[in-house]
Image 1 (tube, rainbow, N blue to C red):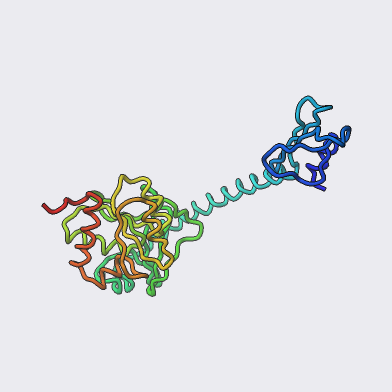
Image 2 (spheres, rainbow, N blue to C red):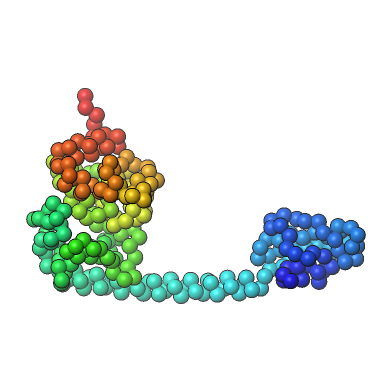
Length: 278
């Protein structure tokens, strides 16, 4: 028998099972079993009952187990938060250490992406290292191996972290560093100043966008539709390849500079970043 059912019965209010949640229900009472002289209201983890013949006010019930469970959950959350803070500090410290051990040089992955002369931080075992910062604070790293495999430091807090190319001009959001390099090349070709934000994930892109006045999104054409969905949720004009599986860098390599520049320019006109032709 439910604890709430038993609670009601101790007050002379007769129910055999839990009533519908969220509304008062008229029920029989022990002293007047032929009439519905009582009422109950059940809210899941608390409730009320009243025998109008014997009680001036409703009796209040709260599930003790639920209260204890909530207390245990709150304690567990506090413990988890402290552990997460510790891991985040350790990840940031490790990021500083790894960056200090890097060499500035070219990397095979970016050569395949169309940038053979691009200088990046390279750690031992040919790992390209992209710093991730929240404001001026280094919070973690994206590490890219020769085959293009990507991973982050254990415990780092990636939410709100970014890598920025350029410091003024149109804000451009994209997920990957190779995409940012292609965007930089195209915008330089168009002679348009830029601030390109590498967000490392579609979800984080949305978070970064909330702190910016507006701009353009370079969305990945994921088979899942995630890239376009996030771009639409951000609400800025966005570019996306018409080929499933492509990002801006893939399109750069397939189409070449001029065709891609013209397509991006069309998006920027919609954003108001460049003027319409007279």
